[in-house]
Length: 88
Image (tube, rainbow, N blue to C red; front, top):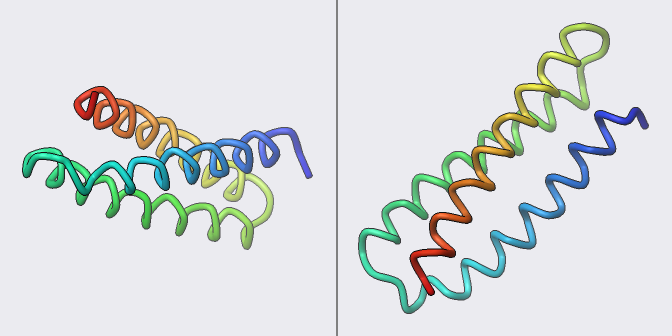
């Protein structure tokens, strides 16, 4: 695996753990936090789709897809952090 692929896998694993933890806390969340969560769930689905696409493509196109997936992952992480902060 390339370094970029390793980094994306670690990002995905870390995001999955954050996502799972937040899902448990959402039972007590306010409606506006739930709305933000639902938006992030749609982004999660897109992120996972990009990762699958990156795994299927090779060469420059695959690298571009991987970099897009990495950016999407960082945006998801930021969204998860916002929700986590609001739940405190």
